[in-house]
Length: 179
Image 1: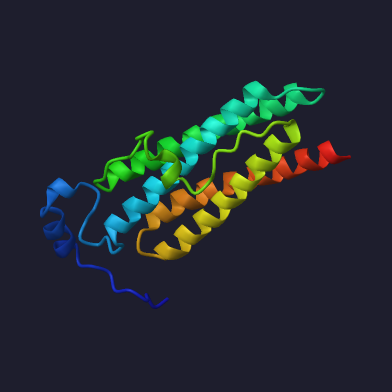
Image 2 (image 1 turned 30 degrees about the vertical axis):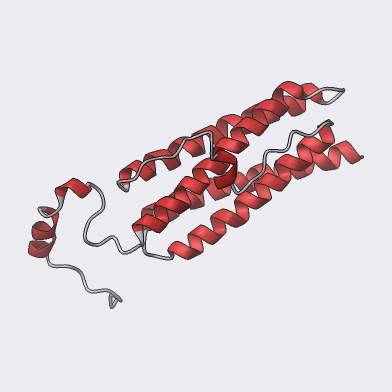
């Protein structure tokens, strides 16, 4: 097997590791535009927080014959979205940034919208729209990163997989509401 990238000599690795210790996990080998990655991660963080809030509202507002079961699904999704937000915030800090939890600009930075929805069907539909937005946003970010930041890319791929599960579950719920 011929490596496409020559390995860095151990002496060089050791020497580079002693420089710029204040950068923590961001070493000389980090090739992504860190300020752009931090901006994207903060947008993703805002998106997840907006989704948490929307799902929580929908959980409490779910009514009707399917209200209890659909509301429980909304709550489960809210908990998972909060987990995503926590992972994103931790990665932002790891890259030397600051997670932006400011409520004043949350909806502006979020890719997804906060739509209340009046009926259970509208709530499901709005959550499905938001999941579909998140799916495309995460795919774009993953493609943007390429192989420049494999750790962030892996994190985003893990979150993307859950967002796809959410969209699939919501599509099933929506179909069940229409039949």
